[in-house]
Image (cartoon, rainbow, N blue to C red; front, side):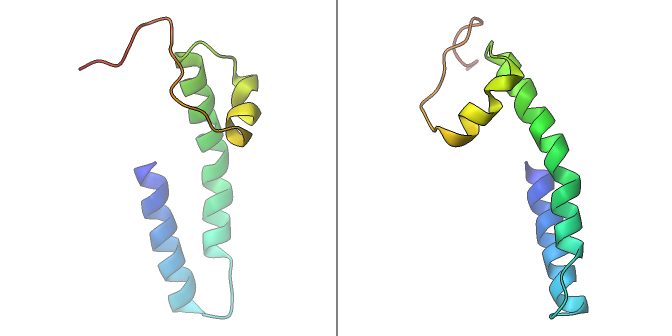
Length: 75
């Protein structure tokens, strides 16, 4: 997540510095980072015991923490 934010900030800055009227660098970065982000989200769903097909449900419906079969968070 931090990597995505940093890339977004750098590409946004570069996009507006190079040519304020043109877009493109930031759009390409978003497209490049979108699929790996979905893969990570699917992995996290598997960590809580859900299939990756639940991703559209979790993207549209916001809820509280979901208990998993491995217990609570480590302290």
